Length: 337
Length: 289
Image (tube, rainbow over all chains, first blue to last red; front, side, top):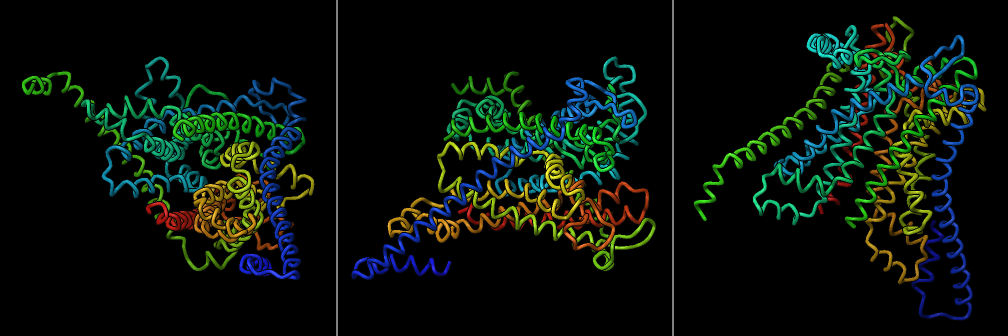
């Protein structure tokens, strides 16, 4: 680096007065600089390519690892509920079901709450409090998922078991559909608790992205709406939300991608039972929790391969969701820019 | 005119609109309190459960066998080693790739693809990264190892650093680049001497955020670095780490282990939150100006 500095100053400072020998050394230096420039360009380009290679390698390694299981079970793997290491019969239905149900619960809670927090932060909050509250919400996103897990297992699950679940079971015992959703003994752990914890984890993502896109609404639009006498809520509901729809949905998708792939928080409280049950209070499993719980203990190639196949399915689902999210956020950016 | 506006102010329609507005506003306030409440609740209980276990022995003794007292020394050191190695492996690749996106190929076709893929990697489930490293490192080598854990974490570091490096370099005003070019500075030198220096704080922020992200990661370590009950500096052997120890101890039936798990959880959370607050304070003056 030092010699480079000298090179540059030689060229730059002695630019005007040159003798023949200096001219020769100058062209040599220039050549050296061109070479370093090319090398650096090549290096950065290679690094950028490595990002591409990384994703391809992830996909290829998962496909190769999953091949034995997918070859044995075929497409039936997706729709088979059984998960029996002894008879070596594996199916992904229960984990897929658990993943979708827990994520759905999480989104049902996090989306309205996150939107309302973003509404508060952008339209109602006193300017002095905006930054601290925003940072506090974002800190929620920074807490490692294992903390949510241990907290969920020791603090939240017992609470849900003692107070929330008995109440729900009693209340809805005679309501047709809800009685099946909220049935069974209150274990505390299960899909419902996992969904709630996921909701807390996803909340900051939904909030911060919604806040960012709400902030990007041109003030003129809002002022015009206020000018014709709209209330704060009406401005938000009929001007801000429609204007930012694409971005907000993109934000939801990012949150959903996070919820689908979340591992540790769920593993602690899901109960790891390979069953598809209608009751939300029943223990279940998700794709990521199955892998986390069983991978190191899996004996036999077919067992390991089935777990990798689960990973491949998870990657495929999240890839689609995230790709859609990025596409929508990009569309919004293009419109804004 | 004045009459009609007074009449409309008292009309049932206007009253209804005002009521809806009030309800929405209070719901928004309630939602915010709800969100902040979780943060307070989680941190509060974490401190309450974890602070009692903090003592010197946590930092000087090894993880104990079931039923005995002990500390977390090997796990803490293991986590430090894995994190540092992951940063050493991941950061250069991330910074170089981010540099390409912002400097050489800002409007390339390649860049837009890389940007898209990088965003996918940024939010890809970390357990899948664990499976990937298992497939390419653990399975061929035949054993779990510290190296595998470090590489798995590095894979998580790369997209974070790529993203922040690109964002921060894009913020550097083009006039600086043009000024450098006008005195004949080659591009590589301009980037290293001018652009990197201007974006320094932002790039460091990105690295800190990446450290914050991986220091709590558990899923990718479960079947790469695995765990180790003992002191281990051998990168070719299973390596203990704080998150995995917490996972194992929290799910165990032993009270001492559970207590250590809470203490470890508190340590990790304090570290991660401190890192993200430092990272934020590094860039915030720039944002406000």
